[in-house]
Length: 333
Image (cartoon, rainbow, N blue to C red; front, side, top):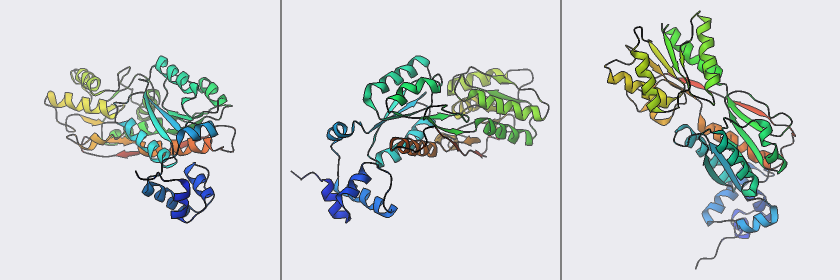
């Protein structure tokens, strides 16, 4: 049987001290050159080094586990975000657990209670019902918290960090894009919660700038089926919209299906624009114009922020980090 690699083996192969290996593999702040850190991590992978998690937990009172709460694990936006979290967390020696809350208050509270049982060191999540004060028990227990938000928010007096994209500005940019192409009857299919309010506000703002009234169908699930159903209603009006802005790509793809089923050409008869730039947005016919939030980058930033907090970030108050968005023009507009 092959001998299990130890930190001493990693140190010998990497040409550094065992203390340096311990710091790097333990996820401590970088005290040496980046090249040294990368060499240690590569040698550890080459040797198949695996830490003794039980011993670590007893010694440090840490589980080396991060939980990621997602409101819809079937929405391709969230697996991409999760991949970003894993990229950073696993490199620092943390396991990642994904939990599907469906954006329901009861499930989000259950996730919070579960996290309080000492199962995880930190949580990252998009929460529709929980507010900053709800996380105060986690903070008091030493559990790090990073929220994925649709607008800038503050954790108040608690060290709760926030990663956000300005959804209002992004939705306004998408709507202005349609207006600049001559559309005046632009309908919006909006979701029931989460980023819906900010996206609807941005859409309405852009229309108001041109003296136009909003046409929003809200409370709709963020799903392809609901996008198809609502689009069917919209295009059966006596005066149908010339463009549809869906609050996420799944609804936009559903809307496109409804248009094709009724023999309408996209974008000649009705243009369609989505939000999120999920991987299938470029694969549908015609390819979907959408707003990219670079969700994998959001996951990376969330994990980096959480690990910095777990290592003892200097600020006792939470920070907010704005991430970029970009309108991706394709054939559906």
